[in-house]
Amino acid sequence: MQSLTNRSKLVVNKKMTFWERIYLPAIFGGMRITLRHFFKKNKTVNYPEVKRPFSPVYRGMHVLKRDENGAERCTACGLCAVACPAEAISMVAAERKPDQAHLYREEKYAATYEINMLRCIFCGLCEEACPKEAIFLTDRIVPASLEREEFIYGKEKLVEPVDQRIDISLRQIKSYPQ
View 1 (cartoon, helix red, strand yellow):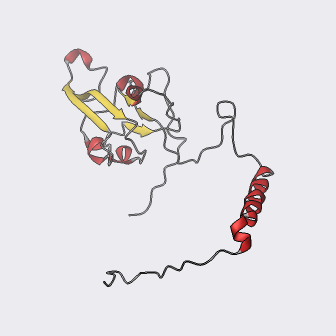
View 2 (cartoon, rainbow, N blue to C red; view 1 turned 120 degrees about the vertical axis):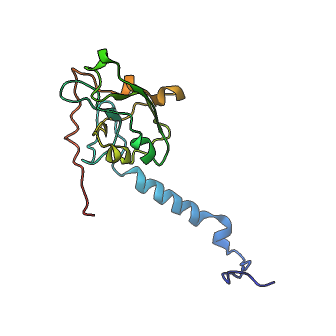
View 3 (cartoon, rainbow, N blue to C red; view 1 turned 90 degrees about the horizontal axis):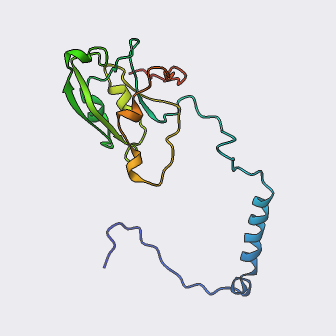
């Protein structure tokens, strides 16, 4: 029967030579590679004490920004969730009550806002889609954990504190011509 792709190879059962049968050249070749790596500079870094420099366009942990008055910028429009290719963002919108005017900028706000960091691919499409510039990816590393539930970040982990603003201007975002 003829192959469909015409990429067939003829397999030949070639007899091994004496040196191939005793495996000594292969063992010495492996030892040579091992010794070469043994004398190279170590690439391991003791992470918490020593930190490597990151790229200026590194995208790390998400943050929901506040405006200059301390109110949350997110209006729960859902564009970030629609733009997310991994479908990691989910939110529930709610109407602002009259006594909450100092907490939220618009009449509509995100009552719950969750990002599943196990699904997130840190592509930055959520921050590009946001019309209110509410969500940004910072230069901070997402902390490791052994529990899956700890990787679902709600508003308590995402919204920046009023007294500890996160400077996102340090990350240089390149804009390419359309």
